[in-house]
Image (cartoon, rainbow, N blue to C red; front, side, top):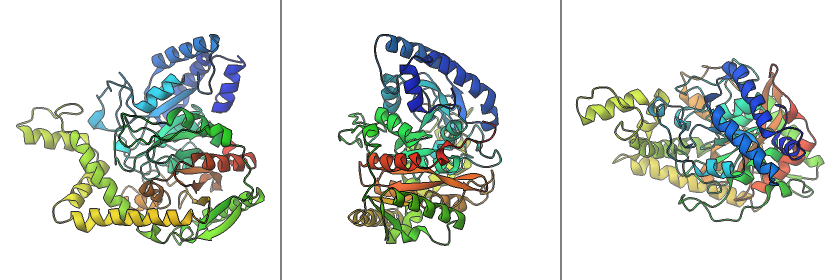
Length: 483
């Protein structure tokens, strides 16, 4: 049963081939057996999962149906879950049990999903490797000596290892798409505002967006259907009708205009990945797509702009974790200042401290105009580049990452090298666009992803292209040895 996709599970449950309770017990046993190799989970929720599975079976017995009714998933551990630890991968929140469910958690629970647990992640979603977690690094099931990508690496590793069919993630600068690429999954970052951020603990509020990680575009369509929609609790949520994403999967690609930015194929891209991307382009041409070279001239400024804006917002968002109201508190503080300093110094790891300090510096008097304001202007130029490009093409295609997964610890002494792995993904967050990564082949036995970007609220178009590509290729069906 662990090899089934969400779509296959939905059909199996509808045809009464197995129950949600049977499936849930099978997957929980598999997690207990295999996850010690991966460290992809922070918390398992066996009792809740079995309770939800029994409830889903009862709903089906009463005549209810639905693609997610009885489907097992897991949540990245920054989505608040009532009465369950929500740690953000940090010592700061190791003892925090959320008093409410995030909107994404509540919507998926209402649709009948079964929550198996909370997945490991880079601390406060800050990282590209899933090595900064307080609970230890996550390992890539394709090679246990390599990273799975981050910050949603726990969700990605668990799905890739067939511990469960799908999971939620969040994407601030590529944190769904990059781990999807490095673990041979399909991962979708929706348009900013498409999925509610209420109850999703913030890293950078103008960039964060929740989305699905699964093995196929069809499964991402099913999970996104349950996650998307307007939420009055979230001031950044957009009141836009949610289409039937599954209905758009089978549209023809005849005449679809695909733009390939020349800036994507620079010296920083592994030439073996470049070859796989060109092979993907040829496959889509066979399906009727029309390929056109385009330019995104301000892409070169994306990383410096992002690494000013994101840390600036993080320094503001994380100021609430002060040892007073909730989270880690130091022992025997001498006074209030000592409480603040030691609680934050003990609670936050080095990567989070680094970004808080960079952000506080960029926002400080005398530097705001020189750094933060200039970065926001660059952000607008990047958005303008995309708006101009989408007048000429329907989709933009390129690599998801410049390199395959690197070895654990290889970039720990050089944070900038890790930041550069986000070079192709962060522009979508700066512009608020939807983006998708899908499997495109292997380099040295490690997976490679191809990224698709679309205009605002065109997630259906991304899913359509990815689904048609997956009907004609088998990269997404490959399974890591031993799992």
